[in-house]
Amino acid sequence: MADDDPGLQELVALQAVVPNTYKPGHWILLDPQQTAHNLLWKGINEVTGILGRLAAVPKITEALTIEHDRGKWRDGVGSEYFDNPDQINAQIDKIMAGATEELLTAQPSRRSESLLTMAMSRDIAMLERGCKMRTLYPYSARVGIHEPKWMQEMAKKGAAVRTLYIPFPRMIIVDRRHAFIEDLIVEGSPPHSGWYVTDRPIVEWLCMIYDLYWDRADPWSEPLDQSRNVTNAIQRSILREMVAGRDQKQIANRLQISDKTLSNHLTDLKNRLGLKTTYQLVHWWATAEENSSALELKDGEAPLNLLDSRRS
Image 1 (cartoon, rainbow, N blue to C red):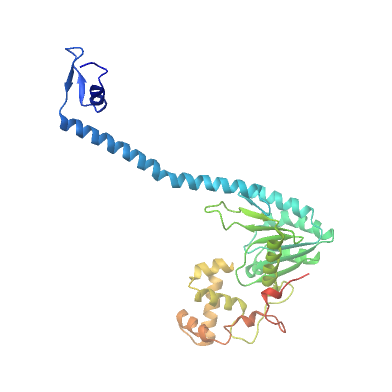
Image 2: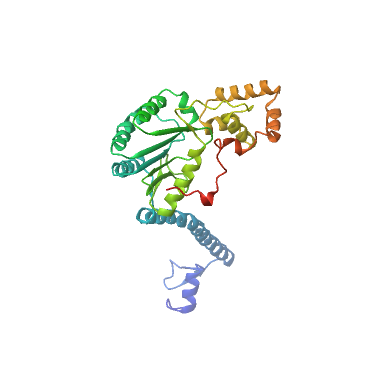
């Protein structure tokens, strides 16, 4: 049989024959069962390889999509994502240096002495240029070490400072045109990453959200409200968090208070109400007249309509 015979070439491709080393030009037919086994094993390996490559497609696509979207975020109009704290801080400093009207800041967590010292000179310079400033802090800042000093100093310079019992988002808004907010989109984003937003409708919406929190906060210059109600504002916040199903550690973290402070508030309430357990306290709260958002409104203030809350 000639080497170029089509039938021989088909057998060679199937690895069903091998050359006879003793008789050049002759071929040896292998066991058909072994040939079939080899072909099946080869096919299984090929199919396994294809399936492995196909299984990797979604992960590759996801990784490419993230990088593609990040590219659009960085070049997009209206918002820009920063995953590096140095970059976003540099952008904040740049925008604040050009502020001419007002700075709104909401700081839901405690800040270190070094951060407060660094921010003070920048904030004072802005106030001295004639800009207004409003800053929102958590209740725990009142009993801190460094924040009260910063509050007192900034209040002397004309800044308005308030504290709030309930959790609120971090944001910085400059001249109602520039906003910096925390990242809630990128999964696994590094700490202190965030978004720089310049879309005017979104920035105005953020200003409205800021004002909602501001109106329910206590001015730094005023003593905390001790009304005739059984609960005070922070205790109502604790009870709402408990009803939402959060444990005491989670609540203390969200309200920026210590575990001991939270336990003291719960003990105080149970003693005044003659209750023994936290479960009894939560049950009391479920039917209490004080369980109403109306208690968070200032005296004489009507409930706010979100569609009619525009401010100049």
